Length: 442
Image 1 (cartoon, rainbow, N blue to C red):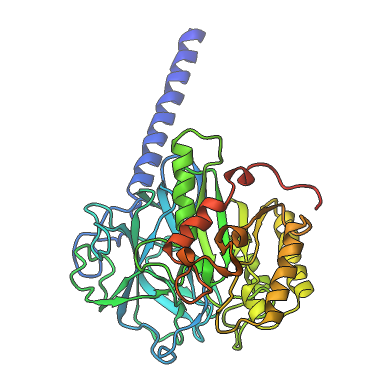
Image 2: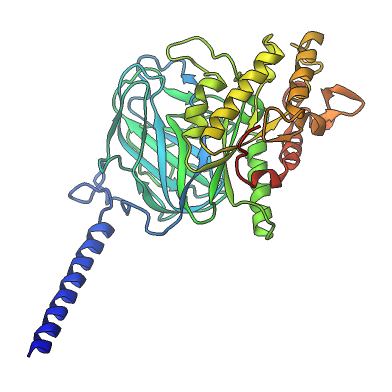
């Protein structure tokens, strides 16, 4: 009798566990971010949008862009009454996604009533691939208010994000928040539409094209394809300011493609995603005027743009040219670079640093500035600044006139590389330098 009672009790416990498990599963699988009636703001049925990714993996950066300043002409109205559809390119894939939105340069709270993410239907398209439109939520709500000077992270959504694909990230606001936080030199066409077209998958209302990114500063993915993030941290050369528009030919893009190809070929290299935190005109030591400061210095933005990215393993630093062109001393530039390295090491991040490329014949070239560049490069090559060195100077300079870029790598302004020059930069980085732990001391 005792045995029968024991079996009965065990059977009851198992039944209870099964019931609870089913209840939990149903609760999670139906958490799709819809309103209670299951419809979106236009009355149409909302797209499926699970509250959290189901599969395992690591959160890594798939795309990023640093906030630069407040967009001129938006001081009063912001983007009130307009849908902003940013187009961004992924460096790795995953089973879930989340985004970061910034109101760093707003002067009032930014209230976004809707946001969405989708895989683009094709290159240079504002339409979403079938079945990929997802509504984004923030703490479970479809709307979010971002205080002036701050940023917000969305909830994760289930979405099969392909590597090397374009994503559409759309926001809509009804309120005038003041200056729009933006990244002006996107080198990528995005789109605008009147009214709330956040979940429009056709792309038809998005008649206005725009060459800047607004509000959006990062897309992270839950990935089994990448084990960490590489951050490219630099100025206009990293920003890709002279690269072909909407072609993803900046050097970090080319480097990401090269790293993916090496992994696919079975080479002994880390499986890392790559994100671009370049800002045109950026300096290590000095930002521009404004409250908050526009185009923040490398020293001031390093915590947000590098240390704040998910699962960062390596940062590749290419800064110092603009400091040189603005008359900074070589020892001050090197001190600034070493400060970045110390901050990275304190967070277990390895630092690969680049020599400064030549700018002979550029309109701001002087012999004195060339001397500073040479002094900075000597310090970098000495091994007392970075963990590893990538010699962009040697790789792109004219061997017969080393104060200038080689003609095949020059975009024509004698400072920024051409598409071919950016590819050469990507080829110059030693993939072996991505491996290994942070040294105890330089």
